Image (cartoon, rainbow, N blue to C red; front, side, top):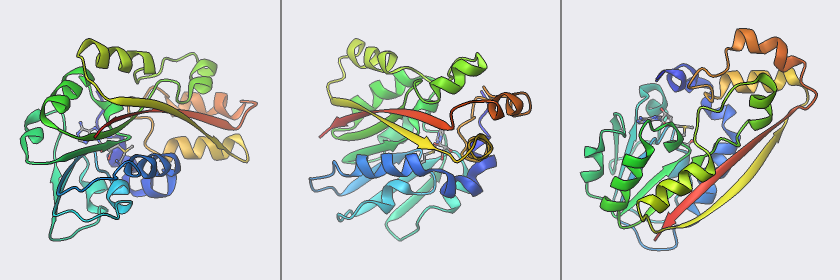
Amino acid sequence: MKRDSFEISAKSYNSNSIIQKCVAKELVSHIDFDVEKILELGAGTGEVIKNINSHFSKYIAIDLSPTMLSQHPKAKNIELICGDFEKLDYLLLEHDLLISSSSLQWAQNMEKILKEIDLRSKKFLISIFTSYTFSSLHRFLGVKSPIRSKEEIEKILKDNSIDCQLYTKRYSLKFDNTKEMFRYLKKSGVNREKVLDFKDAKRAILCLESNDLEFEVIFLIKK
Ligand SMILES: C[S@@+](CC[C@H](N)C(=O)[O-])C[C@H]1O[C@@H](n2cnc3c(N)ncnc32)[C@H](O)[C@@H]1O
């Protein structure tokens, strides 16, 4: 699995992550309780923490990409760890709330990590992109989405008796033209699995009739 796409696009991530920003805001809006220690998986440039207004005493932010983390807010009570969230030891770090926004779709073993989160975290707020994201583009190019469908994620939850509130939300981004859309796709870090070979796909994408991209996110809430 290619693990460098966020590293390559990390510098332009902030200006190209409009949907992730909306998703992080929505996720954080579920914090209507007191929290002391927060553990975040796939924290990136800190979209989640930027939206938290309530007090916390400790925040641990884990991300694989040093360039993403270098843009994360810093403070005495914020610990940044550059590491792989699939090393499940991180879940043993003391926390009373686990958050992960727009990151777990990249887990190689989502079942394992969701099971472990359910076991270790009393409260969690998680958002995961589903395979409906870019579905018309994938259909047009004849490629399969690299990420799991909503149904696959629901099955993981059911099979492992993970009891949480869940709902899905769809978003769309409209571009002035396909050139703009292509630029966004290149810069946003969404091509982690290199499912789109940009050199080959460019000509095809520029012929697309629609300039819209669709996204779908599943929210898992336990509080
Ligand atoms: C789409 S960004 C989301 C960042 C942030 N949570 C937000 O809402 O903007 C996904 C992040 O997950 C990180 N990531 C992906 N796989 C990871 C892994 N196995 N371990 C740690 N971080 C990972 C990437 O480096 C990237 O920063």
